[in-house]
Image (tube, rainbow, N blue to C red; front, side, top):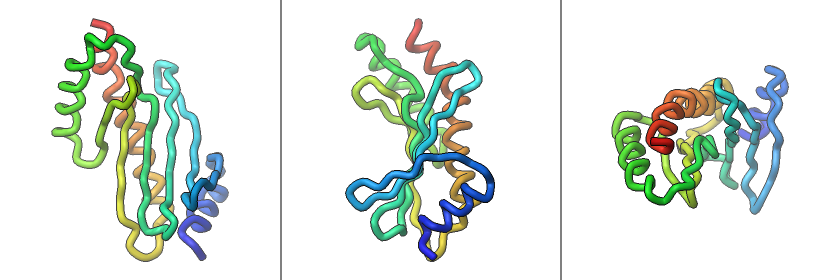
Length: 137
C-alpha cells in the first residue's frame, strides 16, 4: 500500500476530513482550521511523487500589509526560527506561514505524520499573538 493510501486510510479511520488533491504528481491533503481567536489558517500535508518526502504547511498565519513593519516582523520570524527546532516561519508576499519538511524512510507512520501537522497548528497558535503585537504596533 502506498504512503498516500496509508495516510488517507488513517484520516478516514480517525474521521478527520481533509480535501485530497493531486497536482503535477504531488498528492496533498488540506483543511482549513481556526485559531483560538477565530483567525483561519490552511493546513497542508503534501507528498512528493515518490512519496518519500512530506512537506507540511500552515499557510496564512498572519498578514503583513504595512511595508514599514516588514523589518520588525522579519526580526521576530528570525527569533522564532532560532528557537523552534522543526517549525520554520517565513513571509512571502505579505503572508506569514510555517513549513516543516521531512524524509519518509520506508513506510509512513500516519499517526506520527499527522501529529507533525498538528505541531504546525500549535506553533501558529503560539506565535500569532506576538506577530499581531508587532504588526499592529
